[in-house]
Amino acid sequence: MNQVPDSKKETLVEFAYQWIREAILDGNIQPGAKLIERELTQTTGVSRSALREALVSLDEKGLVQREPYRGYRVTNLTKKQVQDLYELREVVESQAAELFALRATDSDLKDLSVAFRYLKDNIFHQDMAVVRRAKVNYYSVIYAGCKNVELERALSNLIERIFYLRGRSLLAQSRRKKSLAEFKALTDALIRRDRKGAREITRQHLKAAKEAIVSTSFSAEPPD
Image 1: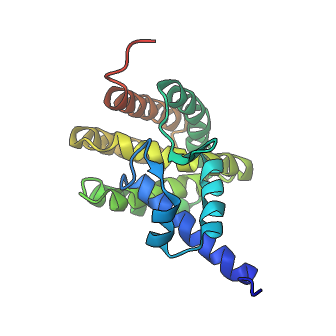
Image 2: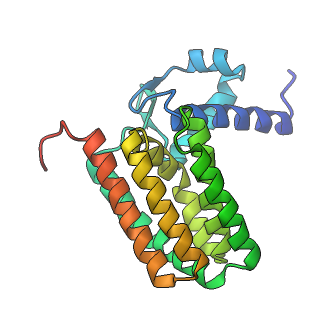
Image 3: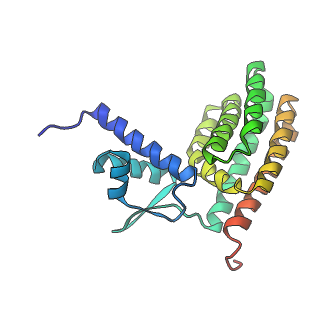
């Protein structure tokens, strides 16, 4: 019986992973939605075994979750999970911002200015995929510029859920406008190498983002 070469299978698994990931991050597959394997294999054109490997990886990243005997659903984060995630984000991202201000090279600072201009030009775009790419680009500059491999690794473990939440928090035009002002303030602080300012601006930005997500996603929930 012929088998698919490992290299080809890995390519198919990665394709399925990226297709589902982007559909979730861009809001094309909604939180809580059941992922039907038959439909996904038809849409992506990959085998069921490749699809299942992709779903396992997405589960590890926190974007989907497996229900015993029922398959996978897109993760629908609870209010407590959002709060826990933002507590961790506050620690990790504020540290990354401070280290960037301390360690960034002149080239990093130039890249940050370019990334901010790109974000400014695209943050009000109707296509959330465009907005997400602009934000990914901006944060990637900061993560690389902090010059801490372990910190960058910790951020990479959070990145899927972070982008998932960012997409949800940026749906309202009013929030996008405020977010842009926050990114402008952060960019200015980082270019000035204002370590304490960058840390505090990051903390305030995350607080505002968390409040936007909680008010949008959990407004109908009874109080804890």
